[in-house]
Image 1 (cartoon, rainbow, N blue to C red):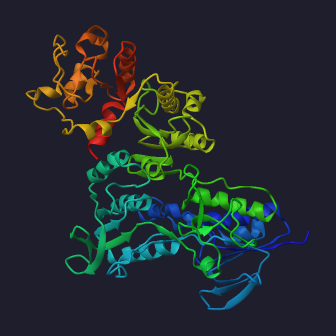
Image 2 (image 1 turned 120 degrees about the vertical axis):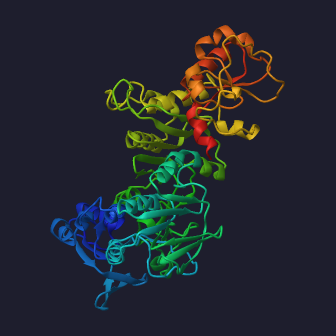
Length: 582
């Protein structure tokens, strides 16, 4: 078989993985990798930590060098070489050495595009002023480190509160800088639903970071005691010595677009499930391509390293005649913000509503390992699933320990189209320092399966909030506010005020309720419930809650079997606290 000549444009996760896989599949192929930067494979996810000093040496960010590709794989790597044009008719590319300006023309049998994505610089006044940076490449990091060393800024503004924005805010704080975090949306980390990120927003503020949510960007200007000023849509002027833009990335499709390749509805390069473009001799991978959303079936952009690496492997398989297929992306991601870890996979609630996909949701707050073993901390979990089949649609977890293990299990289950019934049956490793005999994964399955089997109905605190205006639960309130506290056990609850809405029944202990309670709720401890059924209205829905949902489920089973209209408030008071702070 004649050897192929394969040219790869761009390295990092997509291009580098494609090149290495190609060599493993075809020892005879001529493989060339062109990279306009100085490094072909580096850890761009580690760049914020390099700026913060957590990763002390730049060299630690280099995943693979040109020398390794030459020695291990016999791949010709040409750094600082920018591909300027594709001649599809003659199957050639034009390459320019960015240092010398020398131009060369290279022929190909197969061409792989891995140009990545570029940071978005909003088109606002002053965006090109000195001291305003984006962070995407090693060269970006080099410029920033040099500038910080020269100017010693004390106050920074980070625009955008996604993954990179949050990591930058934390690492700038490590550098002893004052930090202001500005986000146009009403919550940080838009990949998660609003109520799930509240603990992190509170942690950011507790650490001294000013968090401005709902603040759009109007522009930048010079002046004042600091080097720069950030103008926001509410009209505020926020002073800063340095600004970091972290408002997202845009697929780099210039080369593909100029060559006449098809561009998809999201603005990325259109590919099939073998990563082949509209030209049969050209493939594309990584942040520049559109892929199928595994849950919604729609085209989407997923600028993450894991999907890019898999796409690179599949493109290599396709070039070598193997029938590999890319089945889609589900956006599994994780980020740490100080002590908190946030993770997600699949669709969030907002996306499911936008796509008109029916769903059920549950909240649960299990400890990350057995509570009898020291050090257990809660996991705050939200799981979305189909209301008919129980198929998993998405999951979000926030906690301080055990988050990565659980989101990875849920991500794999979601990829295999598993259901909550499968989570019930998942056999997972157990020792008290790692989990529980009924792991949080199993517990999510139990709760979801109970709903689908109609063993219990669930409702959500936002449904109650839409019916009733109430204040937040109060900590250690004055006992004169009797609605916050449990009535004496002898109090007769059968003569409740005439209302049409649900009765909110708290089944926690009197001690728990004295510390914090839902305004307007009534109280019967779980242990007294069977003896006080006659005090509950038979003609009104009863929505029962406890601290996290488990005792509420027990109470709902009791009441349901005695003929009451009952539902358990998902996640109990722990979810109520999150929802009420929205």
